[in-house]
Structure formats: structure tokens, C-alpha cells
Length: 357
Image (tube, rainbow, N blue to C red; front, side, top):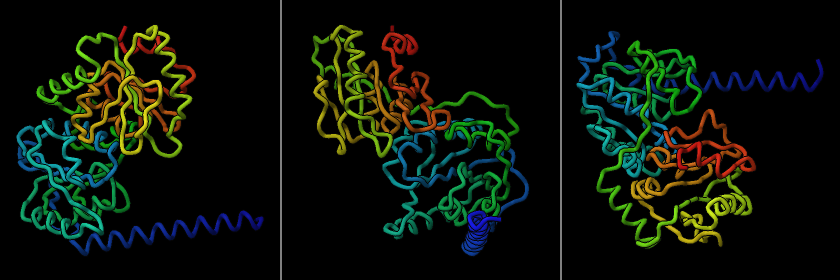
């Protein structure tokens, strides 16, 4: 065996031992703070379940929209129960308004917010949940779950979930999309066949009416030209060059013979619009931004939070996935098209695919 192969083999063995040791350490810590204390071996029938808690500690905005199908399905599968949701930060709760959740808690999990974390956990420990669900196997989710009093705790079968779950289920990865992988847990638990998922963010009629008024005020009451909106903000390799945006916008200006309102969405990271933009819009309120994008006939965006916000709001949107795996992270909205090659975009064909012609 060559020296290079010996080094690689040694590194693989070291990494395997490191992972095994970290798994053992985490499992031991979880057992120390609560583990499976109070869990029941019998799976409660859905009709006996009166209180459910979904645990999802994650700060990424896109992952909040990806959680919508799961939350909606849990509410559907436990019609007689009060379904509660545990998130990380208070700003995340607005994504789940109007879904029918009984309550939303915020763990404030983090070193800088330990006071808030302990306060939340003290309040949760006063309750006894019939069912706690861990849709994703995150270490912070397991820590929170170990501290919660629950009869049944369900998660996927992995090396650590067994330290806090009363029951685990093998994931066959039937679903390729990140947002739908957790649906399999519910199907196995309830012995249910795969069914339609509902990934919508539910906007009130008032929110939609205000957004329509905002759009009219922005472009003018007598302006009847179609609107195209876009957002350039992204991170790292997901950033699309300004020249590529200009080429894209040029295709649609040509298709509409320049009879088109172009609106750029601005943000703290994108404060100066392209010269192509006729109007600009910005709003730090996620729900107001979602409602506005829902009213605009067409929205273009790279793989970033506002894209999945628009898609979940039911907006007609085009996701520009120049880097990310579309199968795993593409838009789930019923009015969304995922594009991987900007050069192949044809205005006429794209509008036809979206049903906008």
C-alpha cells in the first residue's frame, strides 16, 4: 500500500472514531438532561392525541417555508388535537400564521440568549404532550426534546435520535426534496399512503387588499402595463451577475415591446437598483412582502429566501438555480418554474409554461 493510501485510510479511520465518539457523547448528554424519561412504549391512536408539539430549531429563512407542508399535514392528521410549534426566533412565527396552530413557542436556542432559552423550557416542561415530532434530526432539536415532557416522541432512526425518541422510523428517502423528506415519517407513523402536500403561506384578505393598493400606488392608477419583478440578493456562488440580469430583463422587454413595468425588490444588502428598473419596492415585513409579490404577475429570483417566500405565497415566480440542486431545493409552489440555465430562458415559452399568455 502506498504512503498516500495509508494516510487516507488512517484519516478515514480517525474520522469514523471521531464521529462514533461524538455520537456517544451527545447520547450521554441527552440522557443526562432528560433523555427518554416519561416516554411510553405504546403508540397513542390519533383520536387519543390531544396535544402535539413540532420541534424545529433552525435560523435559516428558507427552511421555515420548507416546513409548511409538514405543519399542514400534522394538523390534518391530528384533527382533534391542539398542534403547537417550537421555533428558534420570534420573527419566524409569521410564516405560520393562519394555519390553525394552537400556539407557537420560541426556544431562543443560543449562547447569547440562554436566559430566554431556559425561560421557554421551564414553561414547556409544565405541559405534558401526547406527541412530540422531530421532522429533522438536528442536535438542538434533540436537546429541546430531551427537556420536554411527552408520552410519544417520533423521529427518524439514526444513531442519536433513539436517545430522546420513544419510537423511530427508518427513512427510505422516497422524497428527494428537502421539504418533503420529513413527510415519510408521518406516512409510516399513520400507515398512510403518500398524498398531496400543501406548501402555502396563508395570507388574509386584508393583507392581499393592502398589497394590491400598494402596487397600484407604486406604478400609478392609470398604468395598465404588465409587471415583472425581480430580486438580485443572494449569497456566495448563488449571486447572479448584473449583466446576466440585464440580458434576462432584455428578453422580456423585447417580448412586451417595452410595454412593461420592471420593479426591483431592494433590501439592506441590495440598496441600488439596476438602470433597467422602472420602480423599486422594499419591505422588511415578510408577510407584506409575500402579499406584494403575490399581486405581481411575474417574479424572478435566485435561490434565496424571497424566492421561497414568493413561491409559498402562491406567486407566479421563476427560480434561477445556477448552483443549487433543483430536485432537492427547488420551488414547491403551484405557480413556480425552476430554471437551471439562464441562457435557455425564452420569454414566450416561459410565460406559456406559467399560464400567463
